[in-house]
Length: 516
Image 1 (tube, helix red, strand yellow):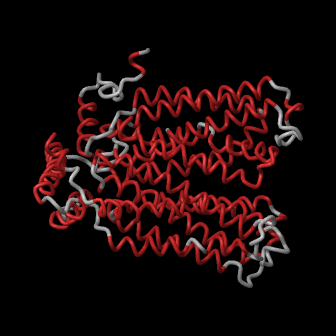
Image 2 (cartoon, rainbow, N blue to C red; image 1 turned 60 degrees about the horizontal axis):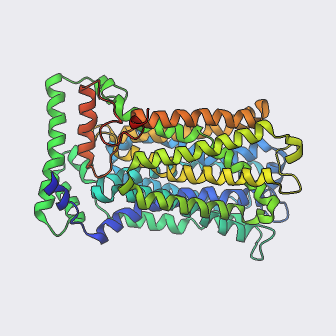
Image 3 (spheres, helix red, strand yellow; image 1 turned 180 degrees about the vertical axis):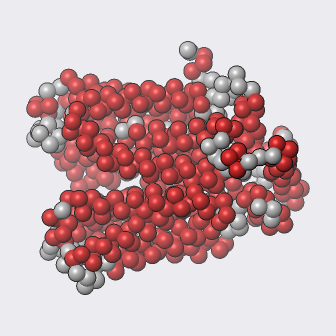
């Protein structure tokens, strides 16, 4: 095993860069849409600058505006349902190709939706193509982390999958900057109908991603799972071109795990129910991976971001609030990227959740015990003077954002890409992506209602409770996987399934067990 690990470090840097950068463009395009939408939708509602005849439809209906904004999330959720059923049959490379095509159709369609359509038709076209773009997000956010994890050397897997999260943040910054330049009234480069150019510009990255997929091989592990042995060897040679011995050793290791699973199925007469990702034998990895994705969504990130922007505006930084937040998120994410393979996944999750907890306790106390009338108006906007309370609030919010980007932001996606056994990886990652967008929609819809019903203090107290549970969850259910091959991670969960008294989180990084 030691010799094999050393051999697996004999990779081609150029090959690893190529097999990373092409899938990572899918993450960049996801972030780009997030960053571009705020300014783009604002300009759509301006009759003088929108360049369309249906701008009044968005002004007259906040519901319709919400549907336009959330159309990509809806598409991503619907797309994740499709991915769940086709992922294992298609393979990771074809998923990336489908994702890039959907991105391209969405980009061109959003640009063309500004054509001379009637009000109803124009909005309908816009919503439809944004849903298609969202389907591209679903295919890409499933295919990208899975492909990168399956093709990367173990020593680089954490860095590369986490770096994909950084590409999402870079996409957010690019989307915001271009959208601000083309759509904002305060920009000297603003043009009529600038939003269509902002959305349409993503065609460049979409085309690059699509063409790039023809330069990367299919996943070696997926090929072996589907008994394409010769092509699997060629796929491994793409990553390890210097050593045929290394290629053969890795091939034999992966094949042995696949053969062992097949023997177990034949011997036990596995039923369709047992092959389901919801069967009891997959409970450990499914709980660890999907649990992190759900907790990532319900610990308050969208709400914290929504409160940070008004305070930055009050400090005179409103025009740059998205850039400041995005830049800070990028720096925090890069810290995680640089240290994930040395510190480990669990340690970063503990650090991130602890920072989030400190921030949420601070925010809960501020909103519970400070007279809202002295610090904000009825709408929750900052008062005219940026007082001490607002400064402390802003600091707490940035601590929260930093904690999220060090922990949940990159690590949740990394864990779902590496903790699932090869046999169910396609469907399991698809289910995790599905849960991500489902809970994202739930949070978007429910948090404003909950906030209006119970107020800021109780809302942030609820997030605090979820954050406390997150620390317990990571300690109990999430194993350390740094430096392990995907086959070794699979063997670990298999061992845990057979030894019920073993704590999943205990073997390699029992941080809290030394304290509790």
